[in-house]
Amino acid sequence: MRGWWQDLTDLVLPAECGGCGRPRTVLCPQC
Image (cartoon, rainbow, N blue to C red; front, side, top):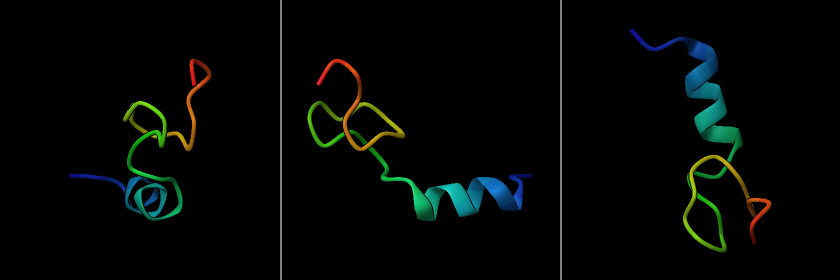
């Protein structure tokens, strides 16, 4: 079962990088 903090993180953090689609970051360091 997923923790409530993971669900909260899904709401707070973007699903993927705006530059390359890498998960869990607005823009990953490579972008």
